[in-house]
Image (cartoon, rainbow, N blue to C red; front, side):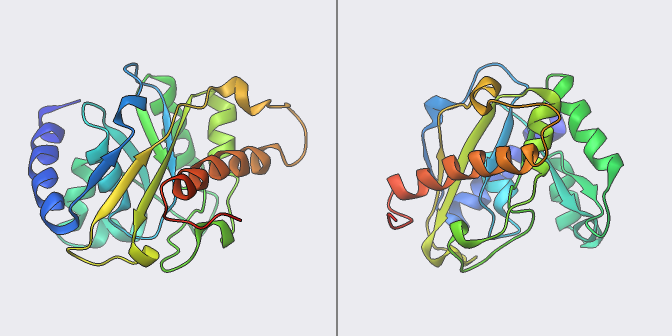
Length: 208
């Protein structure tokens, strides 16, 4: 973790506390050892920074759509937090390899199983991408499920946001079967189910 990240973290922690009044639940579940993959629901462009703020002492590096790196000032912010571009119009092998390298080298990564933002929607009713399962299978990384809760899942300033950190999910818990069709999608579904259970347990989602 370099000095640039530490400075950016200190500054934006204060800013985000003012704008989003972030409450962190389950900080005791954050592993001391790096090399884990954080997976959460996604409804706002600011979600990666909210998660990074919750994981004090760890730099969570996210894939971010390449268009975000063209936005003045905001591109500097996400770069400071370790984000790297991904071209969502195609299978971006370079971005995938970069995430694999990060985790295999002992750094921490972040992914959204939903693939893109789904504001004002129950996350359980959104489609999932197999990417999180694939990254987990390829690296055998421990997954940390995280639920981001805000009223109506709508980005709005000065509305309290809760970042709920769940217990680590060891790779062995996924029961990965190499070579079986649909395994990555199945693993993504298992991960996201754990994410959504955190929302139910903390009152952001109704029980079904």
